[in-house]
Amino acid sequence: MSIQVNTQGTASPIAPVDLAAERAELGPALEEALVRTLRSGQYVLGPEVEALERDFANLHGARHGVGVGSGTDALIVGLKALGVQPGDGVVTSPFTFFASAGAIAWIGARPVLADVEAETALLDPARAAEAIDESTRCILPVHLYGQLADMRALRALADESDLTLLEDAAQAHGARRDGIAPAQLGDAAAFSFYPTKNLGAAGEGGMVLTNSEETDCRLRRLRDHGSGAKYVHEGIGTNTRLQAMQAAALNVKLPHLGAWNDRRRAVAARYDAGFEGSAAVRPLARACEQGHVFHQYTVRVDERDRAVESLRAAGIFSGVHYPLPVHLQEAARTWGYGPGDFPVAEALAREVLCLPIHPFLHPDQVERVIETLLGILEG
Image (cartoon, rainbow, N blue to C red; front, top):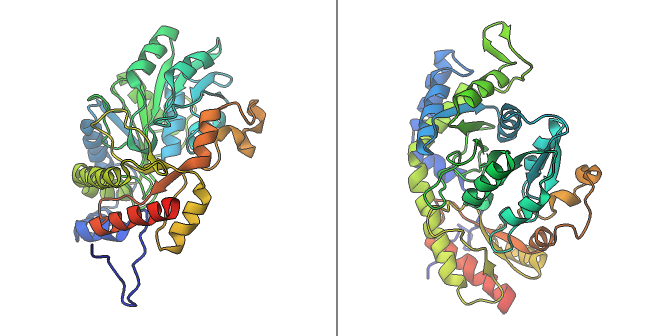
């Protein structure tokens, strides 16, 4: 095995993402698109945003896409477009980035948490069913690490209880589960275009997909001060219009997303083979064989913090997504939860380790990560 080294003869650092390599692969197309948009004078919404809304929706088999300012804004306007009101309960995961539950609280609704599956870290439909009460209005599953929650079961649960279903798809660009994409079974799906996502902008950006004409109209009003026509305001909205410069960058990258996701799957397959049979490194399970887009490659390990530090000392930069469950955050104190309420989420928070994965990771680097981690934990 040949290991990439730097000019000092030491092994080169391995980072979780490589945006420089992404820019190099795109060549001058990205800069040309940004300069073209700058010269156009159309900086907010406009043709670049319209093209992205159309093509990103088509990729997921959705009828409508509505570009917004961030992934968090996508969740907020998505909830409001689906009719969630202050005081309503919204069932979601305790094991996710805080924005999933924070968006619920931000609009005055009540985050209602339900534990996740130990094998996948995805919202457990059985636990979600137990969390529903008379105040529940919506279920908000999180498609964590690049694979979808069990949308068939959650759709059935939502229909049975007359609830809406908003998908947090911030980590699931182009993902499928049993052939189903985000927004195909949910009433809407919220995406983030943060730069480190599988499809990342040159700053903040987000989008909501839906197949409902009515929801699409509500979303467009909500992102523009409640206005469906200039200076005519049918309700109270906000200002979260996607900037044309971000859309232009994303339009250049979108045709590459399928190939980039395939490369992520190839990296994940190398990791799978390297860790096969190890009792010390336990990859999370696949909900289905096809469709995972590996925003993260996540394993469970004992002595996780020691592993992180030892990897860093070897020039390998891993991540922990997420070290503290939602219900144990200081900001969630008033929600009525405490230690021990969601044991699976709490165990995952102690054990998960996200290894470097991106479309530009060299096979030698993958082997180096495997050998180093096994050496730390099994040596």
